[in-house]
Image (cartoon, rainbow, N blue to C red; front, side, top):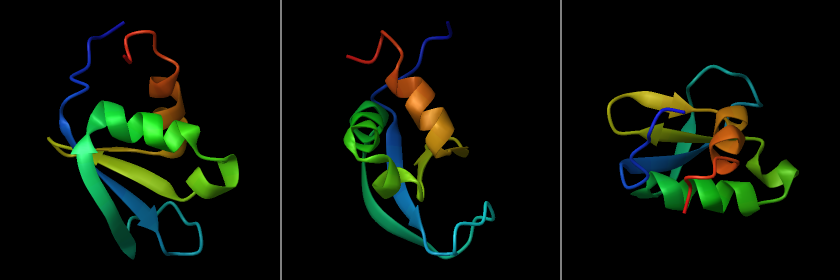
Length: 77
C-alpha cells in the first residue's frame, strides 16, 4: 500500500453537468486536508456524494469510486 499525505491540500467540487464524467461546470464547495474531505464524502448518503470530486494538490482528481477506496484504507486516521 502506497503511503498518502492525508494532510495534502484538497478541494471538494460538485459537478453541475447532468452527471457526465467531463470536468466542466464544477462548483467549489470547500478546501481542506485530503483526509478530512475523504471522511466527509464517505459519511454522506450515496445519492449526495454521486456528483462529488476531490482535486488534490499536484493535479490529481479523485472520483467517488476512488474516494470510497481511500475511505476504506486503514491508514486514514
